Amino acid sequence: MNLALTSDERRIAGGTDGAAMAMRIVADSAALLGAPRLIPIASAHIDGALYHGDSGTLFAERLVEGDARVAVRSTLNVGALDLMGCARVRLEEPQRSMARRMMEAYRKLGCEQSWTCAPYQAGHRPAFGTDVAWGESNAVVFCNSVLGARTNRYGDFLDIACAISGRAPDYGLHIKANRRATLVFDVSALPPEFLASEIAWPVLGSLYGSEVGNAVGVVTGVSQKPGEDALKAFGAAAASSGAVGLFHIAGVTPEAPDAVTALGGIAAETTIRVTPDMVAAAQARLSTSDVTERIDAVAIGSPHLSLAEFDALERLMAGRRLAVPIHACTGRHVLTELDRDGRRKALEALGVVIVTDTCVVVTPILPDRIGGVLMTNSGKFAHYAPGNTGYAVLYGSLADCVESAVTGRPVFARLGS
Image 1 (cartoon, one colour):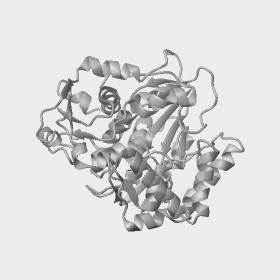
Image 2: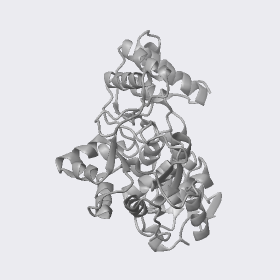
Image 3: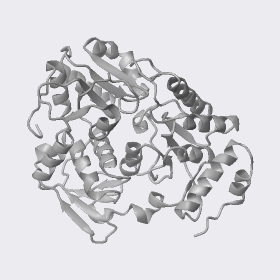
Image 4: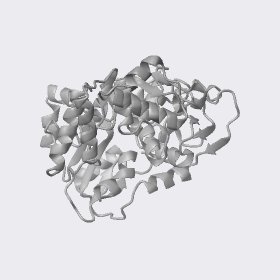
């Protein structure tokens, strides 16, 4: 299939400035993907501002030198530094300076200084049915599934090219027919009290992702609507253990008033009937440590903690000091609220380390510790922490994490309690 550009798109691509460079990147990507055309987008969320090496910084600075500017609203995912000064990032020179240069370049390109993996919590919520170009796996799956906007999983540097050009390739999840569920993930056999618990959704998301890969499925058997934080946790875990870009939950998400609608009136190709044993095995797989006598760190907030999750953290801590620090990753939009009410200082006095603009699995914040054990309630942290931090993982609920941080040793409630 040949890619057809409009006269304006051809004119821009034929230039020598940063906008031309961006348009050519998008057009070449579209041709490789077999897209017939480019489509206008309403917004972008940029994952490519996280420092992975000097080439990323030089690429962004090249766009700046070419006078490029984003054409649509563009928020920024986490960077490699905590620019708010909440947590000490142990990134050394020259990498530290290159990371800062990279973050500054994206500011000059006109991106919003959001620095969060949960832009939907910070007011960036594209309308249902609009086409956008978002990066960062959890943001993508939330945008598609919970908001009903349309995006593919845009990788580093294609995301900013889409933002500058205001265009994206017309393929994948931008096309309505590709958003239809082809399988059913039935959780009706699970106890209602489990489905109502906080721990359920990261575990189910991890199981879902490992079972479906990159397929679009519909979850059935959910009688009580989970809140946005639960949907956030489910999608993040599913996008980490699999390559999920869109899920439906019958009666919950906007494109699935019921399973029949989500399936487009076509019989499911596969039905996965989830059992309690499958859930218990999925939860067990999230832990990689066999240490039972100690923990060295606790990390929560992947995706970034909402204000409601900080409310829950404070209730569970109940004014108690921590024997092991809890690293609580969040966005500066939440930090502003915590500072306004004096809650940040109170939490820090009890041993909470608030991390903004970044998180502990993408940049060195946790102390180097051979054989270290990290506890988390995040399915995404559990998936990435061993490889990115060197810490083995113990997975538990938020209540488990708090009790363990207070006592300095692993404490677990029973499954679903």
